Every structure is written in C-alpha cells, then in structure tokens.
Length: 219
Length: 366
Image (cartoon, rainbow over the protein chains, first blue to last red):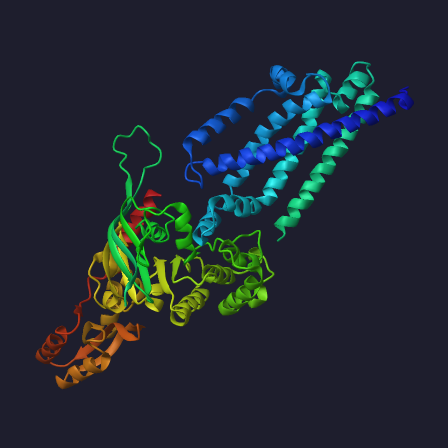
C-alpha cells in the first residue's frame, strides 16, 4: 500500500514547482520567441525588413540549438547556468535551459505561422502608408492570432514535458516526484497518479487554447 | 489638363530566382523603358496579359516598388529616390484596391476603414463620422460591425474601396479589382469607380486583363506587352482602330460581331446573296451604310453582327447580305471602303469533313 498521507504534501509541493517552472518559462520564452520569430519573418528575403545577414545568422542559430536532445542541452549549458543562476541544481536553475530551448522553438513556430499569412494584407497596409514596424505589430501578428495561439498551446505542453525532464537532473517538480517515489521505489501507483495529473494539466491547456483560437476564427 | 503621374524611361528588373549556377540568369525586365503620362481626373486602363508587367507598373506609382532605371513623378514630385519615411506620406495620398481585397480579417468593416485614418493621425472624434460617411458612400453602412469573412466578394471590395478613399486620395489604383467578382458585381463596382471619378474628381488607374472593363469605364487605354507600352490612346480610338496584334486580340474579346469561318459557311447556306462584313463606327454609322446601299440600288439586310457603345460612341461589326447587280455592289463597297473596314465573306470548304478523320485517328490511338 502507498502511504498517501506522507506522499500527498510532497506531491502538492512538486505540483507547485512544476507550475512555477512552466509559468516562468512560458513567460520568458514566449516573449523571446515572439521577438525571434517576428525577426526571422521580417528579415526573410522579400519581406518588410529583408536582411540576408540577420536572417541567415538567426536561422543558423535556431537550426543549431533545436536538434539537441533537451536532456543533453541541460547538461551542455550547465556552465552558463552556473554563471547566470549561481547554481545548476534546483527548480530555478532548470528554468534557464528550458527558457532557452523553448524560446528557440517558439521562434520557429511563430515564424512559420507568420510566413503562412497572406502577404496581400501587408501590401495593403504599406499602400496605406503605415510604417513597417507598426505593420508587424498591428497587422501581421493580429492577422495570425488564431494559429499563433494554437502554436503557443502546443509549446506550453512541450514545456510541461521539458519540466518533467528537468526533474531528472534535480529540477524538482512532478517529473522528479515520479522518478523518486514511483520509478526508483517500484511504486507503479505513484507513477500512474503523476501521469494522470500531467494529462489533466495538458488537457486543460489544450482546451483553453482551442477555445481561444476558435473564438477568433469564428469572426 | 495636366499629368498627375508621369513616368520617364522607367524600367524595373527582378533578379531571377533559383538556378544559381546558370550563367545566363539575366534579370527579368518586368517593366521596360516606360514613358507615360496619366492625366488628372481621368480613368486610365492599363491592359495586358498576365506577366505583361502591369502589376509591377502600378506598384511603381505608389512606391511599393522602386524603379531600377528612370523616374516616377507623382503630383510633380520625384518619388523614386525618396526615403521610405517620405514615401509613406506619398502613399497615404494614393488609394489602392486589390483583386483579393486584402482586408484585415482580424478587424471589422469599421476597423478596416478606420485603419488608414488612424495611421494618418486623425483625431479620434473625427474618425467615426468619416468612417460612417465612407461606408455610406460605397453603400455598406449596415455592415460596419461585420467581419470581412462574413461578406460577399462585392461587399468586401466595397470595404476595400472605402478604405482606399479614407484619406481622400487624388489617385486611386485598382489592381485587377473586379477579376474575382461575378459579372453583375463587376458592373456595380465599375459604376462605383466611375462615380468616384466623376463626383470626387479622383484619377483612377485600372489594371485589368478584361477589355470589357476598359470599355465600361476608361477614358484612355495603355496596352502593355512584355513590360513595354505597345499602344496607348483614347479608348474609342484604340477600340475602333487597334494597331498592334495583341491589342486587336484584346479588342476582339470585348467587341464581337465578326463571324467565324464556320458561321460564314452556315450563313451562306441560308443566304444566297453576297455576304459582306462592315465595321460600324462614328465614321461609318448604320444610317450612312444604309443610305449608301440605297443610293447604289443595292438591297441589304443584316444577317449577323453586334454593335456596342464606347465612350458614348457606336462601335461594332455587322454582316450584310447584299442583293443587286455586281457592278452596283462593287461601287457601293468601294465607297464604304473609304470610311470603314470592308470584308467580303466567302464560305471556305466545309470544315466539318476535315475534322472527322482526325477525330477517328485519335480514337484509334487511345
């Protein structure tokens, strides 16, 4: 039998840690990824701020970081984490590799959604006499809002996944909990409960994302 | 009248995409040495096949494209060398509408029309009355709260027009603005463009591959082919007397009336007299034709054809069956030949027979 009276407070704490990691990572990477994605889109050949050097450099950076398996990425940038965060262990330390990797991936997701948007609308905005920077902010992003919301929903779920992996190297959270009390103690019940909690979190995020995107698409 | 837009030796070259190793990858001359004046207050049609360079040409007029060579003057100002920030001021004085309307789907009709006003820095309390006025003018005042997706093509184009007119431009550029619309809606939109020209005095530049659009609203026509202007002039003269072969083909799509060879065969089977096709125009209107035949004692009746009106002047082709003596017919036709095109229609060998064996052989191969 599992002793839930002692495990439950630990589970509650782990859940809070996961929420903390996910929320901070989503905020940091979401903003950085938006800037990166919009820059990639805008500097593409033929687009508003076409600039081959900037585009190629950013494109190269994204292509270098994205294929690295996340668990290796965490250890690979540990020296950087130590410099910036002062430690490589714990929930807060886990946020840096998460935010960096998620930021790069979000950048790509944002870029792809914007590239798929209608260039005719941008041309109309230029013909009206709007400035290029204002067009990016007031036309390009709002016109792609629904796919962007779905892209961000996808990334929030990927970040939940990342947070579980961060637990493996001492990041805390639900991943850490499942490994310590489930896997290492051969307690399948604990693993199952943790999985169920993660499924509920992911489902809630997906439902909210679908709801928001649908509201915009219904216009 | 004076020119509101002038092009002087304007060329636009685009680098060829892909095939990096090809040594012969010369840039494409989308617009090639074009010199052109657009008179203030007129409706000008720029016509050509797709790829003739007309869309590039129109984008040179509001600085969306910069010329590789030559100069573009708008209201006397040379715009081809202006920095982007100054070009924005020029652009807000030039409206533009598009084939696919290019409305902001994330904003309502009201939001779309208010957008250029906000960009131009109108005070907030002036924006609403102006938007209402514009929507009233284009006839969709009841749709202010709708999103573009909910509107028909014709309604969307009206929103596009209202948006283009927001800053009271002197020039309106219409890039294939009716090509995505059905014939009836096309007529409504063309009437609206005509009204804008008449009531607001806006110079309208219409890009189109449809000659009937030109016939409906244009005062002058500019015919483009492979980036060059091959012909230009008042609409009626270009229609009545097209010079280049591509203009002739374009005119034939909007002015019907010349019988095809198999039509001639059918007509001559039904009508024993001589069949003659005559160009009907200002120089040779139908009463003049009728009077000429009568004076020479030639009997005439119309058996085929069509006439239309361009810039309130008659134009078309009519095929007559003529009866009477050969000499008097010759004399009448010689006289008419002085003022208009005369073509004797002789039936060719029955075309139906020559087609049959070809079809049979195709059947066997398959």
